[in-house]
Amino acid sequence: MGILEVSGVNKRFGGLQALGDVNLSVEEKSVHAIIGPNGAGKSTLLNCLVGKLIPDSGSVMFDGQSVLGRKPHEINQMGISRVFQTPEIFGDLTVLENMLIPVFAKRDGAFRMHAIESVPHEKDVIARAEEMLAEVKMLEKSGMTASSLSRGDKRRLEMAMCLVQEPKLLLLDEPTAGMARADTENTIQLLKDIRTERGITMAIIEHDMNVVFSLADRITVLAQGTPLVEDIPDNIKGHPKVREAYLGE
Ligand code: ADP
Ligand code: MG
Image (cartoon, rainbow, N blue to C red; front, side, top):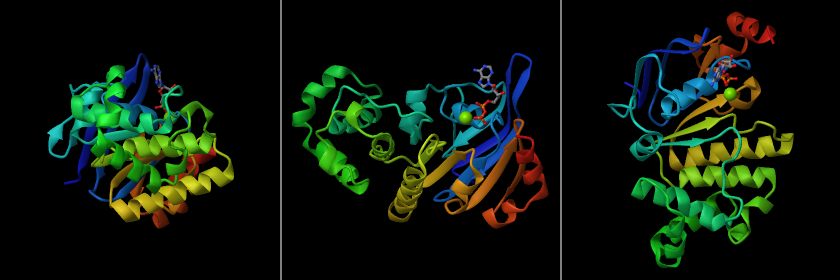
């Protein structure tokens, strides 16, 4: 049994079958990549895992419990944190303030803006946030306004905002989307470091096959809403079905 078990998940949008009978098992402490061409259903699947979408049928079990019917913040409290395709940070707040939001959200189930006023008293939380910022090499920027950060730094901040929750499962939706090559390399290295240092379970969604080959333990290839193959990276590279799925682009 994996820490995440998806079985027989279906999701339609009107006449479009976005997910058809998806099965996925993510082993604890592994990095599992879900790759596939644009429109394959990767984001839809992820949205079904975090409670943003409800599958029409099938089951999603995390850590032995069903996530279906739970609200996103409840699923977050169960131990799933997600990095979005576009950074979701609070531009008017400082880097450090941004880090505290997910901590309060997990602890209290919701974040209320006035909680920021209590921040100076939250010494333990601040220490944890600063430790995490140091880990992603952002500590010296903790007083900066988040909106003034570079794109790559926004992504690092967002990653740190997830990790500070100490999730059991980290979900990443195209973490390198729109990034220049150098930022992509940095992000991959950051994910490798996180993995080595924290032994965290990750499910990473990617459009670009090359990005995940050096990172993933296992890869599931999704095409037109259905898993085509699931295997170790070496067996995915030259797989005829995979080449076919990508050639259609
Ligand atoms: P991917 O992330 O793999 O690029 P998506 O999961 O975003 O793919 O989309 C899968 C398919 O479902 C696409 O054809 C997309 O247009 C469609 N789709 C996604 N979200 C919606 C929605 N909210 N309403 C209608 N169609 C959607
Ligand atoms: Mg997507």
